[in-house]
Length: 467
Image (cartoon, rainbow, N blue to C red; front, side, top):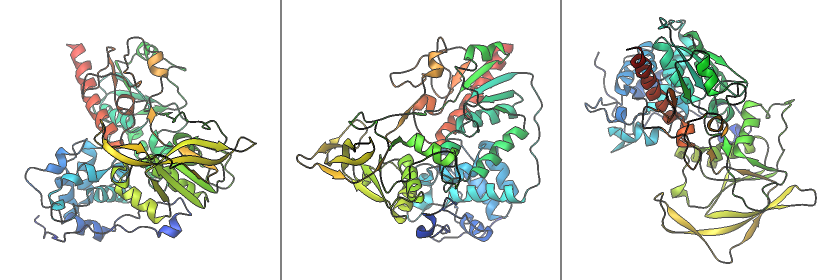
């Protein structure tokens, strides 16, 4: 049915909590579209014949088709289109960097704002969860087994796609909860954990088994997974090994990696009264780094009661890698940005506690290999930032456990598993890999895209062995 187009050059605004209220709670910041808002926003889509938004989506969702269903108020039809390509639509609608992907290619963005694709994806997934009584259909078994290592976005996506093809899939997760970075890394106020659990429950409903507290390389090896009758193994163990700057004072009490800090807050619920997981009650916090993880850590510190929270980043706002929306939310919540600054030493008191951070001012020179202008130290610019907690958020690497216990599995100098391209095949027959274990720390949706490609390749590999 044809619908009347909405030619408003701006997106339908998303309702949010007041900044000075939300920076004291862990409830979701963005409140989501109402039914009327979603239909109105869907009518902004022009349905371009070349579908540039689809080509920019790592999991190739038929975006115009699902949006057209929303415009025609067929929410279940929209959900069916979404879930044909994405195992985690409620998650992707909240945390994907749409501005660099689907929305970044939207034709409406040329003379105005792009269609709110992420907001519509979130709405459809939430609407289905709240209104549908349908249960997923159990696929017909094909008699083959596949093991997946890691219950993060990449592993869950591969598991879901393989299960739909009829494989018996078992996911082995090192932590006590499935979800990977979705549960230990991304805060509740950006991604409620009940929503993650619902997405995981949907996968269990189609036959995916998830075994937690299973550290592959310790409890079981990859070789043993094959001995248990698995025809292939997909390694999606992520990149949870934190990096540090190797400056003096990093071993002081009150210095965290962002991974540890966020895991204590998100997975172990340290923000709740009576939590058994300790976390320092800080007054002044410095978060070193400028990515989404740095924004998450800073915003958590503010919610835990810190008076002053600083983002210390050695480049300018133009080079800041975090999503624009996350930066804006952080600024609204009172996070202080100390840009063109870099730490050189963390200072401690007589008890070994952090009591300050020595920094230098920077200026930008010529572009480096990444294409961003290289920061250069200003002579004589040292100063001390008054902080009692420092959170290092400068990246992560894959844990070496799997590569060190799997003969024939090659990695690069950064510890990332080497694959032969999009299909995720490693140097070990029958072993595939994807997500952060291959790329290093990246986005949820790119990890999901790797899981989809690997699932297809694994299916082709197993079918090929049968011929």
